[in-house]
Image 1 (cartoon, rainbow, N blue to C red):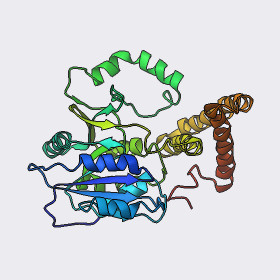
Image 2 (cartoon, rainbow, N blue to C red):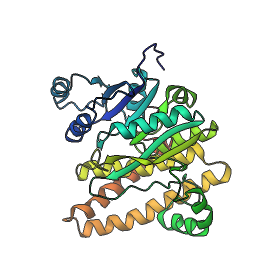
Image 3 (tube, rainbow, N blue to C red):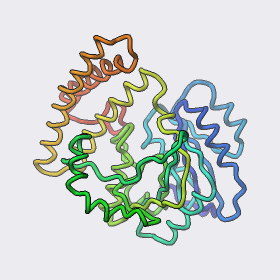
Image 4 (cartoon, one colour):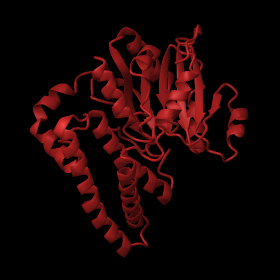
Length: 328
């Protein structure tokens, strides 16, 4: 991590890959004149290679644009941005968000007043209305799938209600979405940055888990909000969707490998493999029959990509995605 004598309070790091429409709106939302804190905005472009980077450099001269060596994933982009950050605090922000100085200011003040909190986030309002879920719990043996997760929540209803008290202005969930993550440089260094085992997905849960290992807390401010056009940065077409949905499953395997212990790790991996082989196969067969429907066709591509990954993982003896920066 680069040390700096800069007086900049906050560095805002945005990782972009061909999300120019959303990025423009995000950067425009950051053009506020703030007197409470000074800030720097950095955009890490993950090698979009579409000729638009220079256009944005001209349109947003106040922003520092960094070109990554490739589409190296969200975690790698965040780490690259953090290395160039001048601020004492860093806000990792998705390009498909619309930020505001009030929310950023509240996260900054809370982080300063609560040094044992490693990560601060806020409410995320969907562009179409409503809010994203904020009562997130870590992945464990009982929450691997939607059905078991629902059962787990039902059996632990009182405990979870106490943990996520509705009257509280600050929630302390297990983890928060990587689309809005506010941290001090000290905490980033303490947990050794974002884990580049992950190319996309679960890197945010992993980061929060490592904050917990370091005896830190994760906080979500209910009296601050940022708009999030969820999925705008990744769900562009069938081809892109098949990649991202495959990476969700791959990253789940990586998380299990990194954070499950003992027999639970083996059982968790086996159950996830069986689920993907059986359920995804059935959906793929249905997708072949309804191949003319894009959403059904997606199931075919997803199944094939997952099977190729399992074959490759067996040969490499590694759960990591072929896109991971930590792959041997």
